[in-house]
Image 1: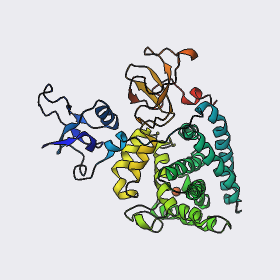
Image 2: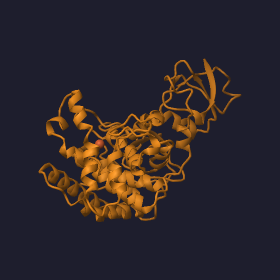
Image 3: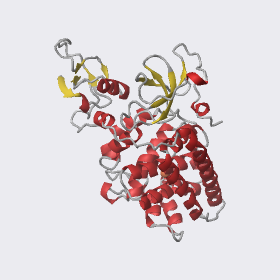
Image 4: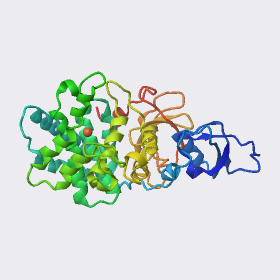
Length: 394
Ligand SMILES: [Fe+2]
């Protein structure tokens, strides 16, 4: 059955039908015969179409009755405002903060595995540095989070969850002290895994029910460890405890419902799932960020605090810094900065000409939103561009 809806109600997974109505008479109506993807929804909005016909029988089940708002989240702007400090300047400080945090995460986990209690309060100055760097120019640390998702997952994941958690807490309007506590809890959120036997943690197979039960104890074990550290606010240990709780009460370890989950726990649940899905692991490829946001959007009402995924989409946009993209004119480049006025038109450092020829340094321009729109995001390996080299990280 065909149904006409506003383009702002489109959700990934809907089937866009060609209604057969005259295009001349309906310039604001979008026509196609295809599944709605994030890229397509973005293009439809960018081109100013107001309405679209969907085929309700060919849409993924459950999408029609839902209150939809994915497209409005994309179109609504609100991405963070980037101060005037260029990413190239902030990158030096961000690199130092990121590698310091990596060393500390490694030290903490090794210490726990050896039966010791680490000096967790030593992380406080590092989280201060993260807050300061994110305040000067968030694109620097956020791009490192994206570019470091390829290796050392156990440690990079802690740092990424801390950085994303701080940014998200800030975006949601939480106080500086909650932002700091969220960063600390992000760093520590999986410390409990250091008490899980390695043969379970690294098992290259599905876990048995008993083994999975042991793994599910890691938030509680982390909580027990963190809460005994004097001087840490309770928000830190509660954030660790609650990062696997889910809005409808089907998470673990306590099965809390949305309103009972601590603020840091709600924020970290989003950051944890986003980083886990967008990272490459031995058993899976990295999923591109815009697809991860689409997946999280579809499970938002069940898993996450009401409204949080819509806010998270607004925060990150669909082309996070470090994404390799192809423009509509065929040139390729790396997203080098967000654009709060137009989240779908970020800054792009153009690296390759249309024919694939590398551009000379003087020909690469850091675009401020005037270049042709982005056609698509390219998966790892689909382009010769190495985003880490683009930012001089090697
Ligand atoms: Fe976890």
